[in-house]
Length: 411
Image (cartoon, rainbow, N blue to C red; front, side):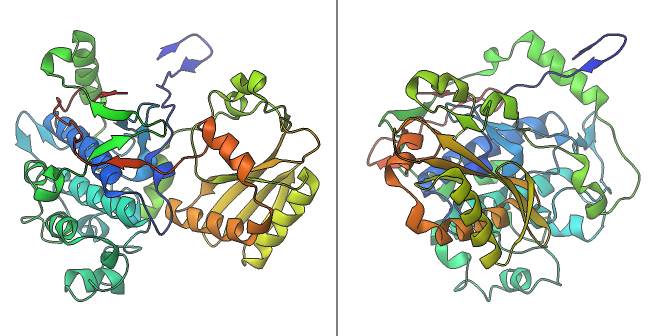
């Protein structure tokens, strides 16, 4: 950061791969090989911050960012605090975070230990990655699905029936209301599912992703100084607060519209694709064969038929809402195919739960299936603006030996 007499400037690293949230397909999730690949990075990152006496307290897919080479980075430390000082651990009492990912002791407003709440949230993230849905709205006795999990009476129901036995055994150790029995980071890393070889992770072009080996010598003096400075300046809030009061106090990766699409009527040809170089890969967009005016009407009609509220904000943008969730829908003409109307329909979450947002997106998309075009979607996939199905190669494996402080991926 820097400042002058008029402004403070805060500089943040740009994660060009978007959020982990963008990789989770509603009701499907992702393949176990990718879920394990990202989960291992998350666990190593948590180990690093816990070893530095910091607890995050708001772990969720929207706060886990990715680089273009699939390096996972934990972001948004607005709820973080020091849970240990000079080797002595203290109990925390601030209720904060995001309710579906929050541990039961945190939801109950009790004093709690720091690291176990991050471990719990990592388990909910893994469930979301493996199934594409959240197991409950809140981890409390008011939730029937949560009580079914605790009493071990709902394993033949969703989302548990989507998860294999090996992963369920590990999740039993992580997502338990008994904090003294909840798995530690070291126990998770020794678990058979964590250690299992699912095969190599491959990019769409068929090249395998491998984690580079690193050691503590990779940590520069600057990084050590920055870490120490952050620890000194982390606030230790003592005031009581409810989850609802604190949920909007932190921020996920911002969307810089001017860096993504500079105009709503844009030539999407290869010669002008430099205008889109900063657009991250998202699954919540598709291409249709209708012109932009017709597309606008069809999106509005499909949203209304799905039972959502629709409000026009400006030219070819719609705000679609349902309960506490809202999404912005923007339309962009694609001028690379002469005499053929092609429009990209882009959905962005404005507010509310990310998984529910994706279900809303799928509902609208399914109602527009007859106008969705394959060639336009293939064009978007070729440029990396929508994902392709990941490939799994038998044999080999994901090399995950690395220092928790320096997590890199070689392509």
